[in-house]
Amino acid sequence: MRPRAVKLWFCSYIFVVHIQVLIDWVNNELVDQRIIVKDIQEDLFDGQVLQKLLEKLGNIKLQVTLYFHLSVIIQCIMKVKLVFAR
Image (tube, rainbow, N blue to C red; front, side, top):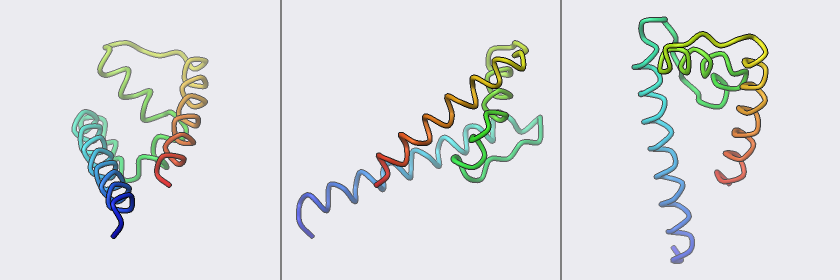
């Protein structure tokens, strides 16, 4: 492999490891609500899981309008994730 290819492979590997750590952490935090994240892109796409996570971590209740804004933010994050994953 060329040095650039090795660097890209390593960055992709590290990215996958970090995503799995994030999934494990979210699942650990939301175990009492019986929420299980398997795929970060699919399960966080509409913002519901993120809403539950923010409510738990912040000990607050989010309004529905904020939930809509969260879903838009998540969609943007997922688009950025796809760009960096390539």
